[in-house]
Length: 498
Image (tube, rainbow, N blue to C red):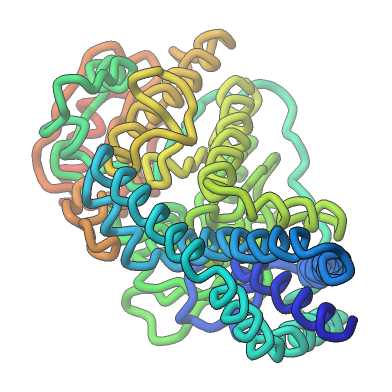
């Protein structure tokens, strides 16, 4: 019994290795980690409960196998070997091991074929040396058992924090809703990793982006706009503050510190430092629907309404699982199935898109930000079927998600038009940073789209000079105050500040 319990808990811990890798780094969070929604005590309690329950289940199964006929022990051995596919999938998704890149580089046909051959080879080895493989796995699980008290101990320490950064916080208050409809409206629509070159210069002939093309034909469109940062954590605070952010660091639950160009000290980011209180001072209601940055707790009562989702594509630092232990347990179990990262990314996108549609159609909102997580991978759309998909080819994922950008933009435009607000709304579409190179780290082309469709504008204007999009903060204020009302006004204003 004791041995089976040891093996069961060890195997259960291995099954949830992806969840542990999500949670444990937050105990030692520093500026070396990217921004994401921080977990709270519920999430640590949930993984302990999941591992314990699953471990007890494995223990009971082991007891049944030992006390039954020989065929039952043989079946249990095969089940043990097969169960390793679950942690193998977690390792593949969380740590992007070299085989993941190799199979992806082989393309949509050779990649799955090579993977199938590998599976057959492993199966052949398991058949030929079944008993040896089972003994090897049992020995390995025995050696790994110290991970169980180690992870449980760290989870217990996290749950013991009564008021620290792992305490589950309450939702902050919101600003009072100002009466009446907004006299002027500006809507920022920001897409993660939306570059300029792919949709406008090197677009494949079989990729249709009708909504984006239509909006471009009605807008001031910049051909050489550069985002103020090379990653979301730098560019989005720069857009919102009008100050160039060189680095952003997660220092506590929903707390960011910014390193701003020209300043020696670190600044704790707060809503008062953004464009939203300035819009409120003009008598406008403000709103956000976004992901990655913890907009709602940081911006607080500078917003009338807010929805946000933690980052779903940040590797092992994906963040919050649920608002209760039970909800968190369920979400952690869902990570055991294949393509869970795509499922989470799709759920995040749909939640932010739904919040964005509500903002776009709300006539009381004068200044709003919609920040969506596409065309950034993982791929969640099939451009050939024009529908969401968890099976689209990974190697072509950016183009698939680019088609989703077009669909998203179309839904937002439809909502504005259905509310009778299109001619009263200035829509600004841009990317938070350019497309990353194949190494996943550097920006391949720093240019991003910058489309400004002013209220009442019908004709397009092309703006070719190099443009630093740090200016979008001040430009928006000029539009909200009525000092800029035409595309020529925008071009003249930008020229004066090049």
